[in-house]
Amino acid sequence: MGVTMDVLVSLCKRRGFIFPSSEIYGGLSSAWDYGPMGVELKKRIQEFWWREMTQLHDNIVGLDAAIMMHPRVWEASGHVENFTDPLVDCKKCKNRFRTDQIPEENMKSHKCPECGGELTDARRFNLMFKTHMGPLEDEGSLIYLRPETAQGIYVNFKNVLQTGRVKIPFGIAQVGKAFRNEITTKNFIFRTCEFEQMEMQYFVHPSEDEKWFEHWKEKRFQYYLDLGVRKNKLRFHQHGPGELAHYAKKAFDIEYEFPFGWSELEGIHNRTDYDLKRHTEYSGKDLAYLDEVSKERYIPYIIETSAGLTRTTLVVLADAYDEEEVQGEKRVVLHFHPRVAPITVGVFPLVKKDGLAELAGNLEEELREEFRTFYDEGGAIGRRYRRQDEVGTPFCITVDYQTKEDGTVTVRFRDSMEQIRIPKTEISSSLRKAIKDYRRKE
Ligand code: GAP
Image 1 (spheres, rainbow, N blue to C red):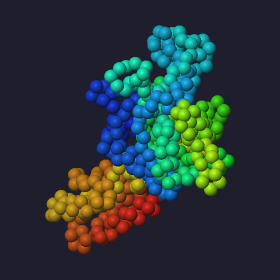
Image 2 (spheres, rainbow, N blue to C red):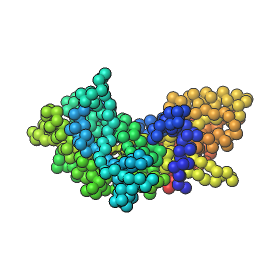
Image 3 (cartoon, rainbow, N blue to C red):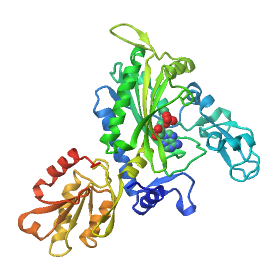
Image 4 (cartoon, rainbow, N blue to C red):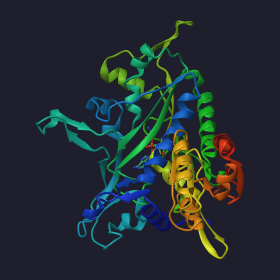
């Protein structure tokens, strides 16, 4: 069954995935902290992406650029001028609204949808966070927190070209924080002011932009299926002329059906030569590419794949959630792909006495080398399984009296709840195979 946001937020808090930021001070609206389970989940999703987008390619390299960049970057990128939302304020209740998010009749009558007070005329509000670098808070020290990671890649295009032994077509991948002073932050970690992006910029010959756009569009859709997201919850949405970002010639979103409806998860953009041309103009540095074979000099086109890491974490959580009835009791289970599950294998002694706790403890220590493990000896074995189901642990191993006799253990599978007996010596290879072959049942 589908999950509501309230149920998800509460599970995340209860099981240590995600907490409200600065909660002991009443929280900070729209800011969230990742707890022991959440940080593992997010890290693994990031690793999954990094592997798919760098390790499995011989022409995509990584980068980690600074969050704070020269302010001219944002003039060149068009963000100072164009990265704005149209806003109105209510003169009475002081609430602020995005004009596209209030009913048309309120816009026409200039009446606040909350209190009926008078609305101001619409004005453009820039979404970039400003700060100052150095002791003086004046225009000269003004800098921005980056609103997208992409620009760190563009300004390093020449550096990578000169040092990375790359030839067009090639890509540069990056994961990092981005900041936007969003007016409407709601729906948990879906839209926040501080978030993380996983972006890959693919540099191509201008004549091949359509081909590579299609290539990455398909690849990125498949990526979510590989991550274990259900196919019927994913779809494409093509940007119409009114939706296109200031840099884009063509754009498709991959959308997910969140508990609150279909919304963007990732954008695939044909950014043309817009960014590199603008940085050439604003920096005065030549950012053209020389094809050593044809001797052609040109500014490459960029096909961008831009996913939210924090937003993907929400997708993975929402998509994994399931409730079912087992022997008259409710079972809450998170069907994470084993490659992103915060804990891969739980290890339990059936009972603490008769040396079973020591046996299980030693086994857990051995498995730690290769897998993310968790040892639990508290409570009935059924309860321990349920606790692991609720944090999405795909495999549990139980050590019992028979283990002492013949060296076998029980492996219990989260999704099917099936249990099998295998020799201790085969645990690692069995788990490796189960992780590799994992497919979630539709
Ligand atoms: N470099 C292109 C770019 O930033 P975008 O469509 O504005 O494009 C890309 O953002 C992705 O970043 C989105 O699909 C979403 O997953 C994530 N994202 C954007 N704004 C976000 C926010 N305020 N909170 C969480 N994730 C966000």
